[in-house]
Length: 403
Image 1 (tube, rainbow, N blue to C red):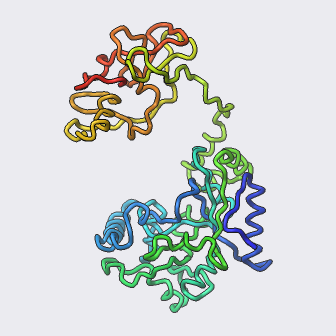
Image 2 (cartoon, helix red, strand yellow):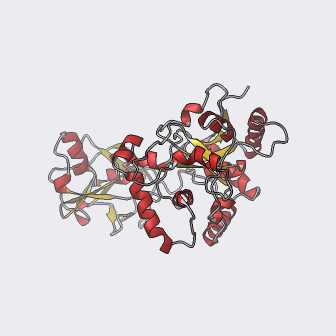
Image 3 (tube, rainbow, N blue to C red):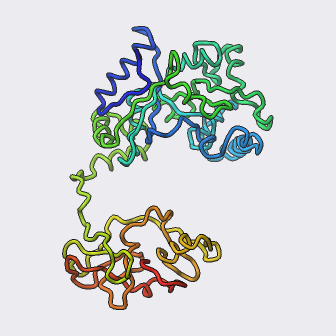
């Protein structure tokens, strides 16, 4: 009996699980099989971009969001692409292909392609996942027919086209008659990437969790394969050996260039302590505060916070919160101030050590025009690092502990 969730730490183990799932859902020798969807974060729901970023079905319908998006895309796209969509479905497929918000969700009938998309952009921070779907069982439940229909392909039986037509209502009919559950469909291969990626789609109806609720249901048609975060880099290398890389998935010069860059990039052992010179400790300069201390000798001219490349956002002083006081104090304590604008991290939950440098008129650290910090002189291990705020920031209204 199939489980609703599996775990895979290698390509070979993944393929064994896929064989088990396929054997449970399909007869031996069947020419069809399951679909696969790779997701960089395993905890993400199976939501198409329109519902992920623009609200519920009711909100989208009330504000005509999808209709406006479809209208503008169809009006402006012809001058920007050589593709010549023949009907509303092909236009909708083209929107999805180029990243416009739709109710479509990308799948592929290639297992390793699905796995590639799961690990391709993984940062090792979260577990990834490959979802496995039986589209025929999905459609048996949704349209009462165990078949996947290509709605824009020439020669499709009219009664079959009518089965899926409600999922793409005419524009500006307020999504009239949109069904609740999702349905599986085949796209016309109007772009080369769609063909190379062996693309398939599900299209959502009114229910945002129309697919997620299928996992673990009786006679289930949806299985999740978890890929641990610590294995994503190894699996990327295994897939490259299998010939699954950007050049095969994105058959253009950009895809080839990304493949070559990744393949010849020097692989080094990961050493998180490399070029780390400091850590946080109770400050000797700012009483009751936190400071930065050298944990080894730092020679004059050394860039101190290598790898700290987080961006800053700039907020005008008039938009800063006045209450509660502790929130306002975050801006006073941890911002670069320029002409009544406060430069701070995108979120104060991402404060890196550099933000804890304390102010001094006799600093041992200097800040350049790019907000990079360098040792002004040799700094001993155990010594607190300080910088002169006035060299790169206007004075705050209240005293603070760090820039």
